[in-house]
Length: 515
Image 1: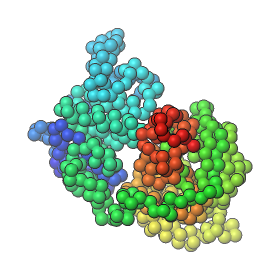
Image 2: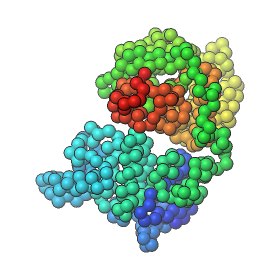
Image 3: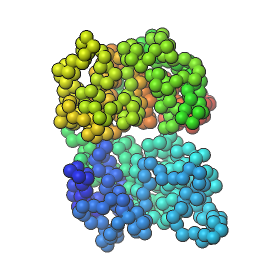
Image 4: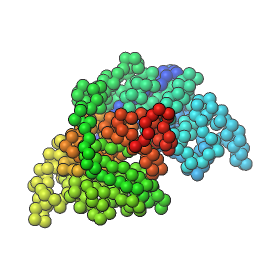
């Protein structure tokens, strides 16, 4: 790809970007959110038409106007969000849109055999007759990869492929990619995770703000080099919470004795009327960051919302500083020092038609200093809002700007500013760094640790195991609404948590028992 440019209105997504993919290599495409990684590959796959630039395949210039063109050129892409029909089988999903040998009878025996052969050849084991809706996320991803391989692609683009995988599935995926490369294929591996890029890629290209920064062989790359490529000189790697080899200081590892949050045999009904949370029991103490690990969709959202009184409790109880949540409303919870960073920043706790200042005080607007004698103190509100906009680097013309005009990342910063700008006893944070760049993630982690040292209890629900391992004092793993096990920091092991994320409760011989 040479000199690719792409703009969306006034936003320049790609600015004269070039990329060379060699034969038989895994090429890492690294960058923060909004760097242009997925946009560049969407151009290659024919989903976007570039404003400028050329694409060459084996030295010959090609034109790609659609995904069909890309597939005919041997280029396939597996997106972060899978395009699958849940009540179809694996085979039906894979062959959908391809010519069938037995179209009148829809007998798929030959196609099924071909899929079995591909799955065995590339280590992508999956039952061709299984329904998609019955498969865990790791197997669903295998189906998407097999869909591309079935179409005979020689270049495979994977967009953030490890997002919803347990560690064992990540290892299995990497082994499969190596087999593909040995058989002559080439892979583009889009990621924002440095360790994955260094672990599996032969060469790594870094994009920042829609521009090429560099391309390096793996043996010339390091975390520090890649971080500086992704964020420039904004981050002091030596002092970074994210990348410091020294780890957390002693004060950040201290945990109090007094429980702030107590969850006892909690049961919560989900959207379909079934129990989404089943008999959960745990507690979070002062100065503790308690993590909840699990593949997305295992009851995390229902758990978080029940603790805040947003979703009714079907059984058990939740105590915050000894007060039963069922007996108080949201306003009282906020006054008790409970704060929340929701997973869905557009649907929960966000007023798109209100301005930035109003969103920054939402829920606290009846408290001082914003409210005096029953009336909103607008000079104070705008003064505080300007301070928070500056401190949290919210990119907006000012506090009077309509909140709907903010980008997703800036809406997340606004949520964080609201959560951290008030005294808190308990913070419930669900994927608080999703959509943020590395300096912003660093800022959030620093704030979490700062508040922890001051005594705040934090329940951190996150899809990213690295984030949980970095910050948490203990981690509980949730599977289909149940807490499968709880590990202390000294027991953290990604493969053990991976087993629990699959619903396996037993520990290997010689390892301490679960709490």
